Image (cartoon, rainbow, N blue to C red; front, side, top):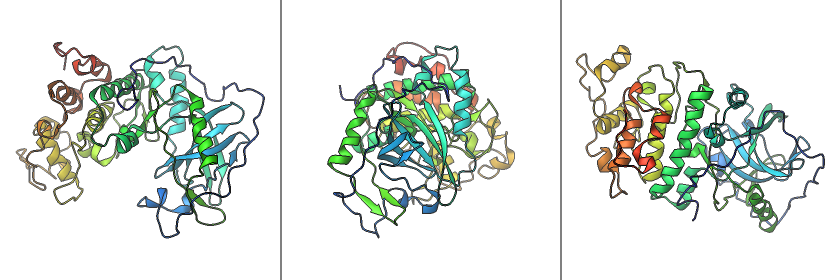
Length: 424
């Protein structure tokens, strides 16, 4: 069965690797010499990859080269992707005889939460058999490299395939099949139940882009490496010291869902404060400047399930003219969920006064859109009741009314028992 129509429901055994405790063979493979010709040169005036980021500054990024060897051990063989704070590369571990992913941070990243998270979570994995830990991407190593403008943190992870966001973009723009979404969300909830109950961690940045398709066969990545020799990827030379490569796309194979990118994770139940979450994914408590905790992740689960299933987003945070602002976002929440409870708005009277009058009436800074109910926007299921009931357990104005990850794992939509009642 193709991996984009179903994620396996079985969980492979997971053996924790403690930071700094990886046993590797003594033999060292030879680094390979990568092609220096035979590839397309992209014209200088065409923006590609990270150059298309709104705040892109070349000097912030380390100029990784294909074939470059880090720490006398990790040789890059393909570019996997990029973000505002890093680029990702498939590399061959010349000592460990396996493929890994290198995440190379920009040198201007002042606060690194991901490495402290992994140091924290490693201790939480000791002595527990919770299967959710198998859905958390493993960190294998970390080091720093010196660039021309500063030092760059590099994290070494288990190699993984593409994100579910990219899979949908490339293979299923209309949305995944329901069984696939059930499988992905089940594994996501397993990971969150472990993080919340054993790790005391709030991820804060859950969405399909941070859900990776792992692999049960590490050597499948050898195809990536051989493609670079048979058909070198197109690239754009910037200078003698910097080249921007196109990312390679791997046809997906069966594997587990791996929750990744803990760069904004918070340790401890909180309540925490500050801006988190992608704009369209922001939970009500973040929009209303109220302290937040584990329930923000549950809100994200609801929107993630929706985005995997549907071609259109439930919330865009924009008005009909495409303008992005909080009032438009709150108006869409009202359209889908109904008005917020007055006692919840009372938790921050100053913020409430920005959008509601003293009687709790919406001030109309953005019109409440007609036709943006869940029932109207859900377009792919013949029987949508169970799915929408699941979404409503995750998307509530009041954080304390959201189901926990453990409770959602027992939801009839996931278990297939539509006749069963549930709590909350």
